[in-house]
Amino acid sequence: MVVTRRRAAVAPVPLVVLVLVVAMVAFSGNSPNAAVSHAGDTDGVTPTTIRVGALATLSGFASSSFAPVVAGAAAYFDAVNAAGGVDGRTILYGPRLDDGTSPNGDLSAAQQLVQDKVFAVVGVGTPFFTGSSVLQANAVPTFGIQENTNAQWAGPTMFGVGGSYNDFTSPMPQVVYVARHNGVRRAAVLAYNVAQSSQGCISIIAAFARWHIPTPVIDTSIPYGTASLDADVSRMAQHGVNFVATCMDSTGNIKLSETLQQHGMGDVTQFWLDGYDQQILRAHQSAMDGAYFLLQQTPFEVTAREPGRYPGIDHFNQAMARYEPGTLASVPALDGWVSADLFVTGLRLIGRDVTRSALVTAINALTDYNADGAIPPVNWTVAHSAVTSLNCSSFVQARHGRFVPVYGTGGSTYVCFSRQVGPHDSVVTLPLPPGVPGR
Image 1 (cartoon, rainbow, N blue to C red):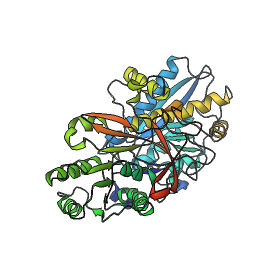
Image 2: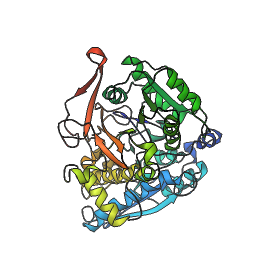
Image 3: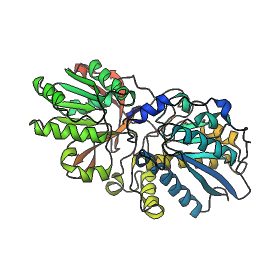
Image 4: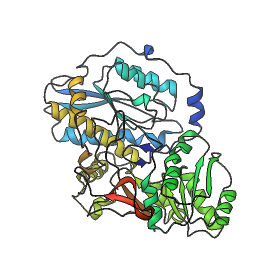
């Protein structure tokens, strides 16, 4: 499943199995009244330690998409503790609770974390997050992947990676930018027939309309697990499509690419919102070769190309290799790392007098947080209820079994966009504002 996160730009999030949608609809949920008694402002804090919990899908059929968030956060805390902790305090990372790919499991885990009096929850990664009401009601600072509803991440104590608010409707200039660079004549848009996929393409469809790119093939009703995409590809051939944007998962995208090749359309440019994963690329090199990927992070590959220019990615790669050697670099692992970094950034700002309220106030005053160059800057004064003012993204292309960063501005891997249409339906790019990594 692909759910695109609309912050400063649409960006991919971890892949999950689409049948989770049925479970989420069927789950009636529990009201905030089910939360346990309110935790205190200094719960989990001692003169020498700060206890932090985690809540993620560590088992079950969606675990591969979410479990790395905990590994990323753990690697960050291990590195911080090895350097002496934060103002003399060690971060105790536990309990790390598993919701088992279950709405009820997620709610129970959140209740358990409150009962255990953790100071904060860092490393949330789940397709459900039914436990959000418990953490919200108890004012527990919470950090993790915002792939859920805006209501589940609402409020000043909830910190989704890159922002806590998703916008699925504003036109996406990034897709037009790639299309124009590749000589688009006519475009196609494909998505599954569930909201988590189809809503991700709303902004793509709107962008093609706004920048006047003919889009004769739009299919947002593809059944998940469909055995064939021949009908869509045949329509693309009939209409002369030479650019396709997809909001399907990597499995569907690979099937699309293979079908294009079978129909003699292997030269069609593909734009994917899911699949930036080295392990997937190794297994499907021929199908993925040439595809473009939109990222809302600094590509992992820049460490080798430009060491020191994006310290957050350098430190992430180093710590994962040292403390979590069995976990490959991935988007959810980096999300865990960024979650832990934002938490520790707040701790360093407030000093030795550690309270939840002080931490939340300090983080919500940050205007250009970028995790030391790992992500585009986030303005936390507005990021709980709106997209930030910046609209910056990075791009990679799959080439011969590697992801290669492409485009960029002024030496940075990022490009920042205006939502205005330029002369001759061009995409307007902007000078990099302060806080953009690599600037």
